[in-house]
Image 1 (spheres, rainbow, N blue to C red):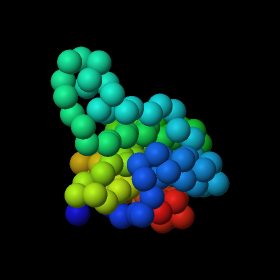
Image 2: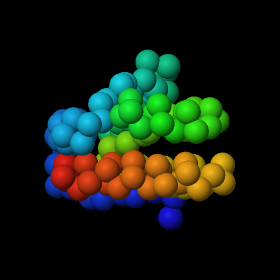
Image 3: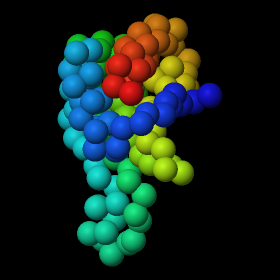
Length: 127
């Protein structure tokens, strides 16, 4: 599966706060946050499902992968999504190993495995 997703009893706002704190504990920071329904509404498009996209980064890991292959820039920063579906809040991410796999570089895949494990730990701690 190309993604990792968990369910939580938290609201979307609570989950966003929890994942931000958890990411800090795992040496990742939130670079940017998109409130998708709000942005679409600004553009005149009605979308009411709570949905947030967080772009997250660990600068040390970003440097490592970029030094290995600049094409990695197409996948950076990592994304974590928090959304509501069927009354349940979900937190997930596209797996870095799936994204990096397209470059077929074993060194990148090893780095991606570590980043993926750290992000999964951060999500688990936040749920």
